[in-house]
Every structure is written in structure tokens, then in C-alpha cells.
Image (tube, rainbow, N blue to C red; front, side, top):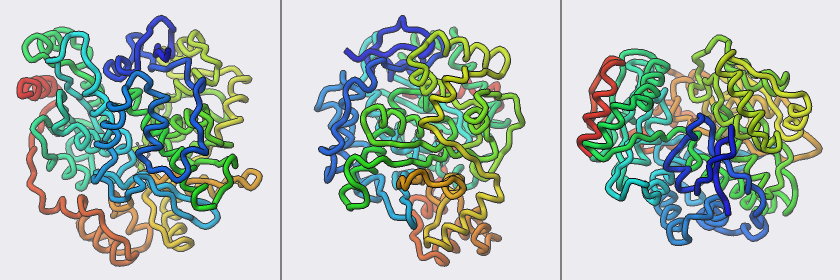
Length: 494
Ligand SMILES: *Cc1c(COP(=O)(O)O)cnc(C)c1O
């Protein structure tokens, strides 16, 4: 029986459905299962299969309490026509290496892979308090997550979603992506303050017992979060590692059984952790390479064994990787420490109390047998966007460029073939990409898209280009103090 408990204690015993509904453990830990890896996935059987069939094979191992019909229904709805490539996460050659595109979903960022299916999972979880209870997702976003969550939860049965973004601090394209969102169950609101102010207030709203009790009683609404610590956001990402492998075997680029290296632009450690889960499930992975931007807290941790969040925060041209606390690292430490929840609990207490922790040298050595690391500053990111275009005729976004830099900086291990994960469409960051390529970036973001398309002969994703004329549905702006009542109003409308 696969059950889930906290990384920080082993007392809970939840099904995957319960873990998905609950999101985070009461002690602040992340849900994990000790059964991970007991059942493996037969890689040979995946070659030639569709993404949807690969998803079924992988997810039925990771979420065994979902029925076959339930899982197939979730997968069918999540990975359908809304993707612009029917391989969902296509792998393409990039010189001697490969790139896997994770950005062909409805919002052009890799978060779609998980956020298209999370709402479908959630509607199959039933509350202990009865069927009429609805879930209200509340999220503060610095850009990408908000739109991907809105697109996933819009009109999803039994759910609603409220997204807050810092006024004037997301890109014009990102803002329009959110404020033009359709759906009867969505709310989008700007906050006077920065991302941290909004994020801190969202946490306070989750912790406001009186407010939560009132929502439960008057509106039958319970608040939940769609951030990347949810099991239901993590496990869909395991699928594309298997898909990449199956695609490469099918194309004759690798032999069955050959080990691969994956290079992953990393922020909250969710994407790369999914690669580690894939390895534990039997995928031949030699190395997983953590690529960071200038916020290189993970590089320092993986090279010294000390995680120290007390450092300056840099706002960079790869905003989705600008992170000081990399939450999902906790799950990696749990498995790497041979499931030592007492150690994890101590480390996380240190992080909370002192802003830092240090792992035993033996644990760091073991981690390094699997995880490589590197980072790129903003000049290097710009240079790599140009290099990738000049060398390979392939346009990458600033996040992917961090990975591209690290991949080229590091010596190839024993002829291992490498797959770079491309996490966003370059058209989400058209100004930075135009500047890096020496193109005219003086116009609006939409003009920058047109310039990029003309110069590179690549197509602008329609959902981004069409934003220029899409009707804006939300122009609310609140102070931090007004966020709670905004959530209350949204909940009352559900
Ligand atoms: C979220 C995001 C990342 C970082 O992924 P994690 O799972 O948080 O490590 C990288 N690139 C883009 C474009 C993203 O949106």
C-alpha cells in the first residue's frame, strides 16, 4: 500500500488523493512515500507509445489509488488539443546534444505540464466534509505560475482560483495573460507592494483560522495552494523524462539502457526532482544537472554542503528562477538520506531559526553522485541566447539559456548524451531575446515579438500575440490589507 507522510515525521498515512487535496503536511513538511521505487516502470515498453500512454504507465505507479478510468480521464483532458505539438514535450537535436521543449502548452511555460492536470486530479479527491465543499486556490505570482494556474483551474468543477500579482512588477505580456483570463471561477488582482509582500500575505490568509472557518461555514469553501510542493504538481513532471527517453530510443539516437544526463534550469527544485523520481523508477539517468541563475543558492549548497538563504536577492532576466528557498530540495534530501525524517526535521528547523543548515559530508558526497551543478550570470545568459541561435539556429528563452550555459561549461561525462530542458517559449521574453540577438527592441512587447519572428523565421504562439487585442476582464488593485476580503468576495461567488 502506497501511503504518504511528511518529510519531517512518519506518523501520517495518507492516500495520494488525500495528499493532493491537503497540499502540505501539518508540520510544514512535504508529502513523500516510502514506496517510491519499489515498483519500477518498464522503459522498453514505452518506446513508440504516445505521451498519454506513457503518462498512464508512469502515473499509475505514482498514484495507485486513482482508478484506471479516472487517470485516463485526467490525462486525456490535460494533454489534448490545448498543446501545440502532439508529442506534448517534443525532443529535438541541438548539435551533439538534445533539447526537450516543455513550453508547448496553453501558457507557453513548463508549468503547464503540471497545472493542466492538477485541477483534474483535485476534482477526483473528495473532501472529508462532503461533496459540496469547494476548493479555492489562492496564489501569489511573480509571473508564470499565476497564468498557468489560472489556465488550469478556469471552470474546473468544484474549484475556484484567486491570483495576486505585484502591481507594475510583472511584464506587460504576463499581466495581460492574467487579466484577460476567461472563466466564471477566476479572480485576478494587482497588489500594491512587491512579490514578497503578496506572498507573505497569502500565507497569512491561509493561517487566519477565523477567516477560514467563516469561508467553510458560509460558502463551503476550503483554501488550498497550487504551488510546486503539491504531490499533484510534482508527479506529472516525472512523465516527460520517460517521454524524452522513449523518443530518443525511437529515433535511434540512443540504445535502450543507455544512460542520459538531463540539464535543468532550476528554481524551486520541482522540475529536477521529478527527474530524480524518474531515476528511482528505473529510468537510465547518469546525472541530473542543476542550472541556476545569479541566485545561486543551490550551486553553493551542492558544492559546499551548506544551504544559506541569508544572501542578497537578485531580480534577473530569468524571474522564474529567482528563488532563495528551494522548497522541493527537502524531498531530495529525504530520499538521499535514506528517508531520515529526523535529520530533515532538524535541518528545516535550522533553516527556519538560523536561515541556514549544513548536511553531513557523507550525505553531500552521495548527492553529488547524482547531481551536478552550475550557474550563469545575466551577461552569460544573453551571450548564450545569441550563441544558441548562431550555432544551432534555435531560439531559447533566458531560463533555458542558464541551462545551455551550464551544459557547455561542464565537460561531458564519458560520452553521455545530454538533454537540455527548455522551460519557456522565447516569445514570453521577447524584449530580452531581441536585445541578446542584437535586434531592435525599442517597441512594445508585441512589436518585439514581431521583430523576433521576422528575424528568426519562427512562429509567434497565437495565444501570446492575440493578447494585444484580448479584452481585459480584471483591473482590480488592492493594498496588502485588502487581499483577504478580495479572496472572500471570490469565494462568495463560487
Ligand atoms: C518555474 C520555472 C522554472 C523553475 O522550475 P522549478 O521546478 O521551480 O525548479 C524554470 N524556468 C521557467 C520558465 C519556469 O517557469
